[in-house]
Length: 300
Image 1 (tube, one colour):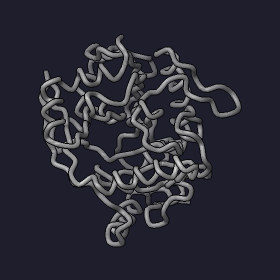
Image 2 (cartoon, helix red, strand yellow):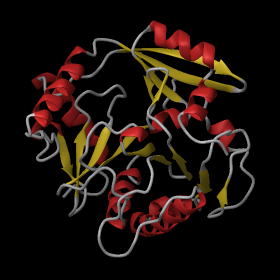
Image 3 (cartoon, rainbow, N blue to C red):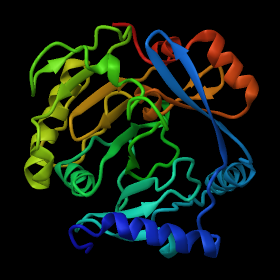
Image 4 (cartoon, one colour):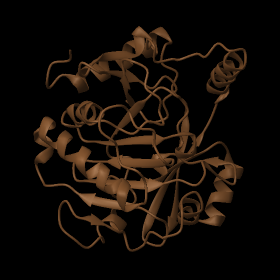
């Protein structure tokens, strides 16, 4: 089990070693900005995706032949940072776009379309108490999930080299209400639910995990989704994206994964997009990022 206060150092050391061994295959990117209203959306133009595409095709081929490949059971030793809890491991994202991108993976198989559990939140907050990051969960394929094995994700902040740590933060700040109230973001034209957390609660991982699990159920109800049930794992009633920082949580039900061929996962709802080439960048710039978010979610 990882000792408290050592996670970041372990991530950096594991990253360095995995790059040298070739186990970690970062995807090079160019950073661009699309300005829309008061927001500077971050867009990463991905390059050299061949190895990731080949890995995905190999998984699809194995599945078609009845041999499902699960990269998390077990995870690659060279990418494994350590054991976060009795139920979860910390693993580097093999094809990372964001540096030090961490996956928080269940040790036993659970489907990505099952709702989060208190244990999931405990593992997430044990990590988030270690360093400032953005946690997120892609609930199902339409939510941007690429693997069936349940995994939460954590990327370091800031996301952007300049401006707010999270591009959409200026809009989140406009939500009217106090801590633990389920709120709406006035500028969001799509269905969502937002909640601010009590300051400093993140310093108590066990307490914030229990509390956030309860708030998670409230967020689901607010957007018309079924909350977790007692006992066994509950299947999600709809695809969704969940984002969490030390200060807030945001949940967005998803209607589809793609906007005009561009795949959107939870990071898009933080204002961070990924496109495959300059043509997709031009399309996103012309259409507008907020329209892309709205058309892959549901109207308010």
